[in-house]
Length: 293
Image (cartoon, rainbow, N blue to C red; front, top):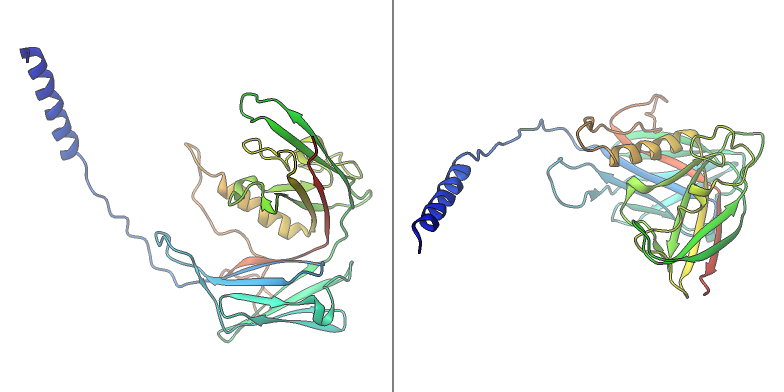
């Protein structure tokens, strides 16, 4: 071995030892806070099983699923009727519309009533109408920079004219969300656009109606493309919008994460900070098609 090679090896070892000696272990001591009740109550007016999910919050660095909250009383109050959600023992509380019918009185404000560990909470949601999805089309596109080759789908629906509307658009490929576990990619709309300005009563704009395809995994011939269009109240829309903002909150100019404003109130009818989450009741419009070559 040449002398220069030995010198280089020795220099590399010295650098490695120096880097190791410079590494300090830093323990971050976060304040312990009591667990908070988290409410996931996104319901629709269709005939499928409706679920309110209750969990308790966990420490920031605890890398495991949150625990379901059991023993609560959950009801949704409608026009001259109360819908009781039964405790499944795992944090899920279910209502079967085959018993007393779907929660579907459009234009009525429903109230969620929740009792947990002796405390009473409530929230309200106006059931707004939702436009019909007219059709879904698809076109085959070759591979390009940032997108794979495959069939790219678009849905067509027209926003209601003369009113302010909020929507949540969901898309599925063969029954699986086209963007699973990606809260940063929620598809939300005000009227027929993103900001809503000038889109009242219009067909949903191109970026929205084409967002039902995942560029990384477009559709193939024979796949089933399904779209769900859900109406939202403004508070539920703002909640989901903040979820998207928080999920994209990273990089050099990121801001400290914070709890997202809830629409759930205490027994006195005041907004509070001890319970997180949201109650939302949506009208839902669906359309499915098989992708054909």
